[in-house]
Length: 101
Image (cartoon, rainbow, N blue to C red; front, side, top):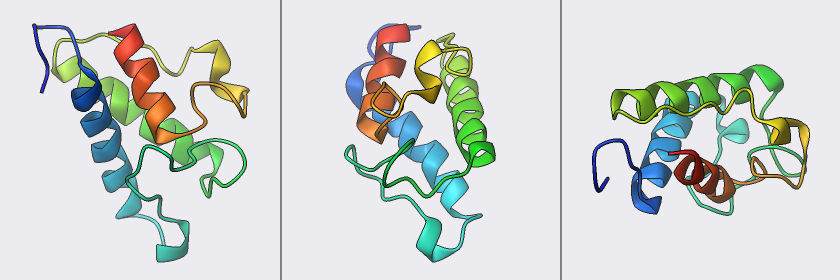
């Protein structure tokens, strides 16, 4: 999944994002669950998540990346409030994770 220590490839980053979403989905009612798809909305139009759920997922992703030796800081990213930014979809979120790794 990941190549060298401390580096995440795209597949590893997406797997981390999906694991965080799966963890959150277990706590949500069926109508609020997010599909594990790169096109699934995370922030902005089409997203079913409230701010606490978004922060929970981002914290989980940071922790999982850290456990793999990759330090990332998603919660401090300036694009968090942008509906068309790197948090828009699960795929763009995984791309940001890869870029920060």
